[in-house]
Image (cartoon, rainbow, N blue to C red; front, side):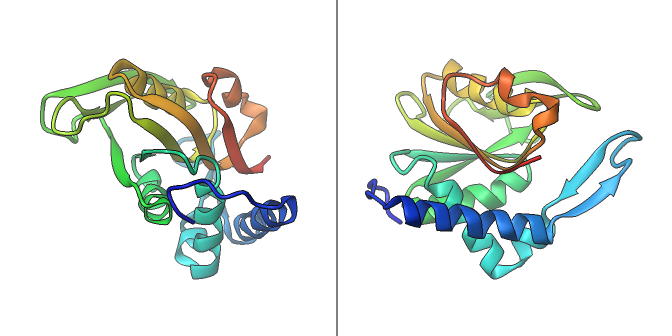
Length: 190
């Protein structure tokens, strides 16, 4: 895949999505009551450690926005996804960090998640983000606060989120309802 959009047949798109979904369903490990009681954690580490599974996931996520100028991955598993997708698209990658992990100046956004609150940050200088078309990536979409906060960071600095994509969406938590007008792709929805 390249930075330039390629017209693909519906069969190719369907096959790519099916390969990625099969890998996610087969390899994801589930952990109840982690990191806090009542939360069921989806561990995608085995998906990313499997060469074929990782490649299928990266290809599927890259297809969400082949016109992106920059891929942005949310701390921390989004870093892995972002690097793979950026390499596939021929773009750069930007790490969206948890609060306190970047030197100042930063642009920061606080948000709520299913087991507390947190903050995300991106550099306020050193990377020209104004006018950039961003593909926003995360591993799991749960309540939607993390992805929405990340998108707001880019809007604040004058970039445009052209699409967002996740590996796994927990649809019953309705996180999709908190997202912006950008298209949102999920490989597997539960």
